[in-house]
Image 1 (spheres, rainbow, N blue to C red):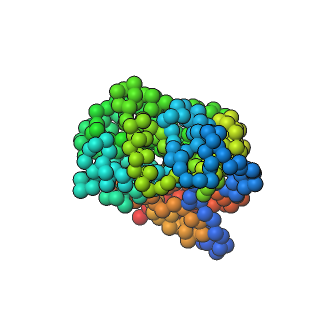
Image 2 (image 1 turned 90 degrees about the vertical axis):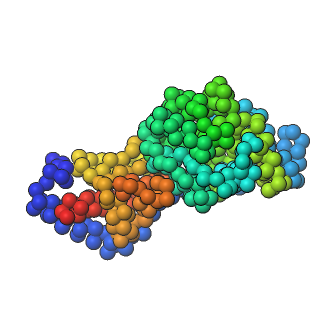
Image 3 (image 1 turned 180 degrees about the vertical axis):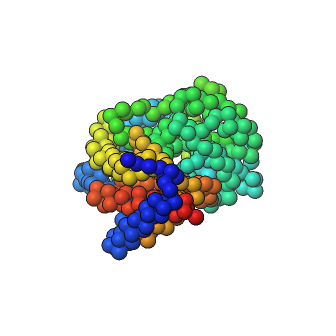
Length: 420
Ligand code: PLP
């Protein structure tokens, strides 16, 4: 029978602690080197797109552009059409860029700092704030930290944050942005629902307030329920705020993480503003790679098919994480975790005050975990509770071994705390 640690007598808890300490010592002595830190595709996933390395790429795109030459800042129509269909965005409202959507986000922020958005004052010199649902993506928070943007954490529920709380915050004119990962959020797998999104696009906010709608996992379903992307640009327009949203997406976790294509979808005014500045920064994106991708993927269904092949590789890994956590930690009263239907992460919440200790114990045992606090602005998790698990990269054996080890560390850290 599984008994919560809090219900154990002091003697039983001490005995368990002893047993877990020796399990941990054995693990450390084995000298393993396991890593479940970053959400990278595995080599098997990258191999799915191996043909991209050899496919013939013609010199000219469908509109007659010579892809080997400069120019074409909006990106090729053939690739924009494919991703536009997948996101439910008209081809005129989406542009294709180079390999990183994070780079577009950084550029957007820099342009806002130096030039201002929508004729408003540049952000430089202002006390700019962003609403930051937590847990969230550490690299979003890193952009804010790097540029001196204050982050206001709000709790991210299964279907988004509390919209009344967000609306109150957005009423402050110094609040200029909000991070949103609408589908299978990094790291807790949240999927925003229509009610939440309609509230976010219609709430009053500063004229240069934007929702940074990072749809990085729009197509990354782990089950056969393939939800369509929410038509956020359309809803923003219906709400009378057509410029409210910068939508980002990318093919990093579709083809090659280091060599894919990123996208920005938005209103015409926002795209013109972005392209006006981006044209100073570059004379045009890597169109050869865009055409290579368009030829390889063929159409939106080609992408959907590829994503199903990714799912075949990823879903068993997520199932293994679920199975091990349930078997080792279920009913022990010291941890809870998410059961994502898509994306790249599982969020593990351990006993309050023990996340840093779990990460340190795992390190001693040769298991690299994302640092505790990484999913919170400025790395500050007020409860020292949340750990992000990334099952995609390691092979199945390595993943299973790492998860057994992590479970031991979670129980050990909790028993240590309860014995104090
Ligand atoms: N956005 C989110 C939410 C992510 O999790 C990641 C990568 O993990 C990225 C963006 C990075 O995207 P890209 O490779 O297009 O820069």
